[in-house]
Length: 330
Image (cartoon, rainbow, N blue to C red; front, side, top):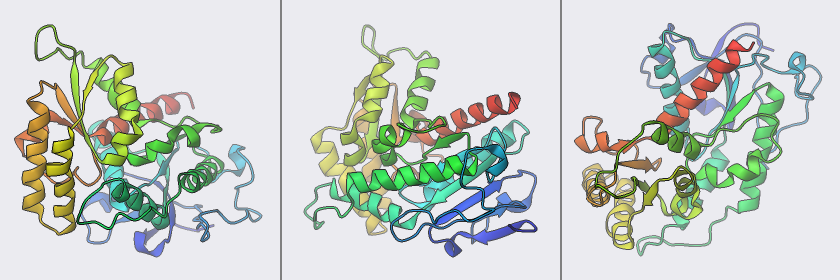
């Protein structure tokens, strides 16, 4: 147990499991060169071993049961967050949670964040190896679907035993394993695709062409598109999903990702703009930008972004809504 509040840099946790209760009135959320999260009093940090599993519980760590008296956090609105392809994405999601909460004049709810560098690398390899390219050596991915599923299930169990009452995964490709991770979960596990589809349904959009169905564009990596969960959730709400065609993938999206690898931001921006315009001319109401790599490519004042949706925003709003409802029931 810690006797007082601590702040630890992310690079000191490998992998890191961070517990926090973010107060928007503190200086914590000002820009810093080294991002940190506050660790509240009486918090515990646990690390996975090389296999991605958590060490056996020791007396007093409170990881043996779901009873609130034995949990690390006993608040009914505590949220568990499983990081995915990068720590940056997890931080981006946390920032959105804080921003939305602060707009309502409230502090962010308690949370537990799991970020595993090994999982980061496996997911990145999974995405890159699903993207055929003559400039890449497309070897068989070392990541195995079942192994990643087990890794995520271990994290879900840790979060449940930590006392969280809801789990979110701010990473697109992680939702390929959503069903397997949530199957035996004792708490709800929000689905980012469902959050997006529900908000679009509630927006009561009108087709851009009379007599046509509501069309939603989807721009994502090959791996996310192949998983099909965004298409499934959108179609279940009555939307027609418009995907990039083969030529757009091969000549704009894949080269844009390669440009990012070369730190050619201008090239990536130009290619992404072309890909978005190709989707928009097909009479889509909006484009879901479901790519961790592409999310921050265009400047925030780019007019094309007004036509796009960031699924992280929908997931953040749904998470906050859940937390507020849970808090009222406390």
